[in-house]
Image: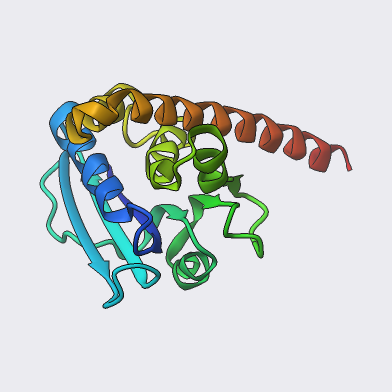
Length: 192
């Protein structure tokens, strides 16, 4: 039976959500050799309105290109978290930008401060989307790290390539740390 996965990136206009979705789709389709469909939606406001990018990844042809029941959700704002959480499968992977998402009901979440990392390590909030893509490769099995990095390298302007590669690496490291904390918390919960 075909493995089809539905992934959603959601946040605010200006956070690079659409570009991140395009990069994910290219990573899955071009570099991982999967079937992929990418759709996007955004509000009327250029900055601050909602922004969403869905990526459907499959081993076989995709019959319907939009996400209906999410296997993965990245929420880069509190509103994005609240509006999309109900679409996440019970066993789905939830990742939030803890810079902007603090009111989290779900205990099984990777809370990583993507925007804060971008601001503090690189002096540019506009690489938070690339930080998040690096993190996604560590917490989600749907797109390989190698493919995601290749897609980032092809998509970003050459003069910003090194910055984006460092942002990608920072995201990977932050996700590894978040996974360790999550595993430790699960151990503590099991002992209680």
